[in-house]
Image (cartoon, rainbow, N blue to C red; front, side, top):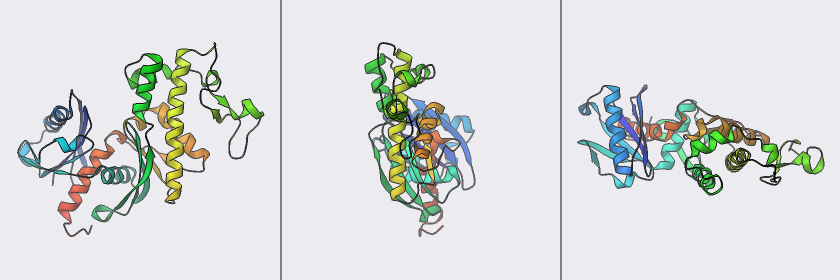
Amino acid sequence: MLIAGLDVGGTATKAVLVTESEIKGFADVSASDSVSSAMGALGKLILESGVGVDELASIALTGGGANRLPNRLLGVRAEKIDEIEAIGVGGCYLSGRDRAAVVSIGTGTAVVGAWGEGACMRVEHLGGTAVGGGTLAGLGRLILGKSSVDSVLEMAREGDLTRVDLTVGDIVGRGVGMLPPDATASNFGKVGDWTRPVDVAAGIVNLVGQVVGTVAVLAARAAELEDSIVLVGRLAEEELVAKTVIHTVELFGGRAVVPENATYATAIGAARRLLARVTFPSGRG
């Protein structure tokens, strides 16, 4: 059985093609609105995968823009899948786990607990934070005059955090509790005349990553999942962001990983959730 999964945002859509045993294709498209990006991503997915529209059994829709789409696309039945469910299922599938705290780093950040397999997987929204990719982009525009996340990340790679952030060692000369001397004591607490724009960019990325990591590990710990944290979303595949989040999680005694194809986790989760429902309509499997 062939099912397409679409994670529809405000202007960008990630799309995947899945069967019971494999992922057969990926596509992503950005456009001026969610409907255009969704239709563009679906068309690109079908074209590049070499399948016919008539081969699709169904389409799974999730994400903030999903509700703007009809219940049939290109003549194929489309079903809405709750985004929280899709995040949990997709993160567990990609990481090969049957229990995890899946952290979706999007415009904001959601932390989702997932336990079990297939249609029987239990998914619970554990919490999150409004800090995420939207924060990174917004601060980049306000402070650095950069119009995209990619531009801020490019600058950040050349930056020096020691020109921006105040560390625990700067204050007390040693570590405190679980925190080593180089742990951040105050984001942007050391900004001065010597601070360069690239340093500010590094500080913004560090701030976002540390907030996400702290919220993630505390929410995961409340569900006894701090040893099984899975990072998903496009920002999770950015090495600079992932490194900061993972380091922060580890400071608090947690463990986090970024699975392959993390960008498409929510689309994959939507498709697999729908696939499980169709295959096991009674809820078993």
